[in-house]
Amino acid sequence: MGEFSLDNFVPYLLNQAAEQTSLEFSAVYRDHYAMLRTEWRVLFHLGHYGPMTATEIGRLSRMHKTKISRSVKALKEKRFIATSEVPGDRRRETLSLLPAGRRAFDDLVGIAERHNARLLSQFSPGERLILLDCLQRLSGIDAR
Image 1 (cartoon, rainbow, N blue to C red):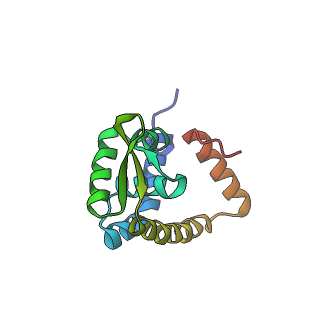
Image 2: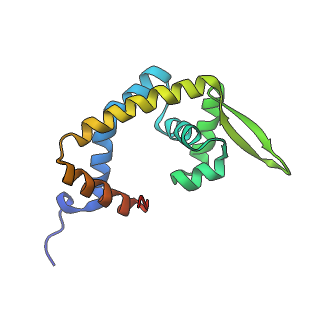
């Protein structure tokens, strides 16, 4: 067994890569919409998948329910989302985007697409496919 090195430790490298590649984009949603990362993730799930419960967002995003709850509260205060009671279960609420939330989502998706294209532009087409495949497998996302 060789000497342990963070330079080859996959969780460390993935975390470093995630932080580095998200810096520019996180500045956009922070500066333009006063959003935190968790708020962007909640907004993204509602914009991408449509109305859903906080539990469903948690399952898809792998975020802890307290982070989702705080994000929902902040997004409601910004008038980006609305809540409505789930029929037959007064303890659960369906979350959905309000018009301001839809506009923020649409704006941020355009910026995210351009940011993603810039990140991927440093790789050849074959490397892009390999990178995305490897990351999807490690994250448990089956994109096939």
